[in-house]
Amino acid sequence: TQSEIWSKVDAYITERLHPYDSVLEEALAANRRAGLPAIDVSPNQGKLLHIWAKMQRAKRILEIGTLGGYSTIWLARALPEDGRLITIELDPGFAAVARSNISLADVHHLVEIRNGAALDQLALLENEHPDAFDLIFIDADKPNNPGYLQWALRFSRPGTVIIGDNVVREGEIIQEHSTDPRVQGVRKFYDLMAQYPTITATAIQTVGSKGYDGFVIGIVNG
Ligand code: SAM
Image 1 (tube, rainbow, N blue to C red):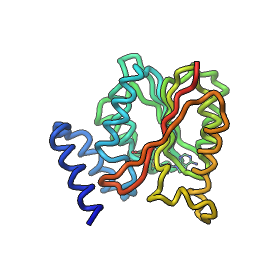
Image 2: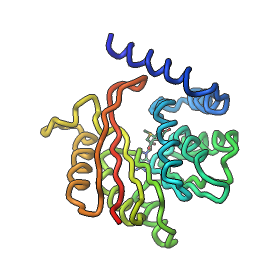
Image 3: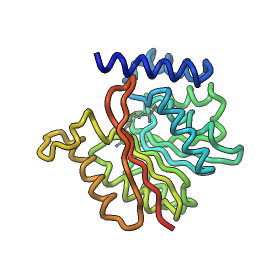
Image 4: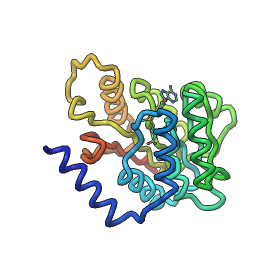
């Protein structure tokens, strides 16, 4: 079937271009043992996030939606030694698994995990007057994507890159009357991106071991 081919090609790409990485494999195994849903980004997508962070020479990264920290590790590994990554996770059990995975990956000195609802945590973060982030990865509950984009823009500077995952949803995204609140959240997210004159954005459809989906990527204008 089509999806078997996508998975096989993903495996081919991973075998060719990603040396075996026991830390990342162990993180996924720990997630499975703890019963976390396997909704992390795929290895190829994790590496794509890593490359984007490097291209951006990111020193400050914000991630919304940690799960077990798989994407967090990929992103943190792109940071310089004085870099900082703040990641927000609602579920305390998931955050605990992420904390352990991030320690085993030896990036704990770069990463701060904040446990709580992201909209609340972002409001708390604003009180701390943080420096602007260089890259922001939005990957939590999709109905809140419009709110997350507004926060992301507040925490941005000209040149900040904002990325969102799961913006195609097997094509469901074009169903304007969808009753799925995730589809509606992502549709509003597109509408907001289109409305803000301050952001230049596109989305790219992806296939692979995680099925048919897509990333949105935008850059805040100078
Ligand atoms: N970025 C992760 C990765 O690729 O490894 C995957 C994140 S997973 C798709 C989405 C995560 O968002 C889940 O762990 C879920 O518990 C979390 N989440 C859901 N609602 C949230 C909220 N309101 N605030 C913060 N996190 C939330």
